Picture 1: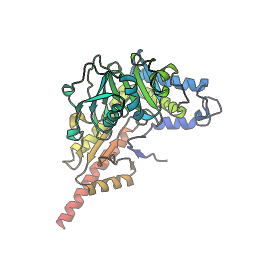
Picture 2: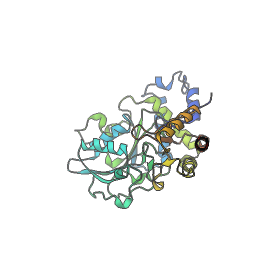
Picture 3: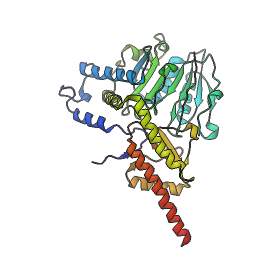
Picture 4: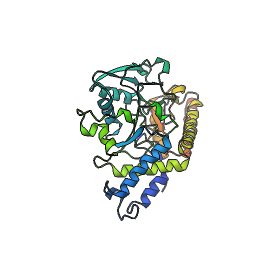
Length: 370
């Protein structure tokens, strides 16, 4: 069976090796005579899978000892509320940097919990760039500074992060976690929905500095309190066992591949192929993001007009490319090239883009001369 050329924004491509291993263990995991979905989450077999996923993520990301890794549910969207519930005290405020739709949503939820402030935004330029660090003037007494590290809709990404010193830096890394090396110690909290780089939908990873977890916040609902999940090793209630198992396999795959160093190298090659196709098109393809803010995860672009875009998307679909439509809120085109998307698929897309441009322009020239 030929695999799809999958450029979906999320849920997104998973490594083929991971899917094959899961298939081979589907009916009998670790000689239990059961699928992983049938295991008790309190069983020794599942506990081993669960802890292995935590330890492998810590190893791959070089997570310091003073951080906990939590496996939660509700997606990154629930974290928009959990973060202010746990970190934003009544007498404090939280600072937010707006770089796209998801940071806007995070801000709107935080406003329901406490006092917030927008300290930088690129909304006035249609989110085509990331703010300069010098333009981010955050409050030295802020409960935290929130950013979204990669913006899937607009195709922008932070290349350098603010050094917030004593103010916890909180980052939504749903779409670029594990895609490049970062210094986790510079962050107070990192959260990410798994369905782009880490595994299937249904699980959210939270990496949180231990001192930010309070066990005295009785007013917070039990399931929304980080301490609940820290104290129970993320097993307070029944977790998404299949998603955690597949996360564990994806992390093993990443480790076997060569870790984040190799992944980052691969991602750069993939992005460069597509950005070269855009930049060398003499304006036929127009990238949304400014060059110094371009995402290596989501390549967004437009064509000369809506009619040509629709023709491009239809012919791409006919050729086996999946998920190239831009987000419904902005239109255009988008190629999501997360860790599991093979380099070869990006080369095929780059070639398709070049051939489509050539074919279209030759056709238009023929019609003009007719």
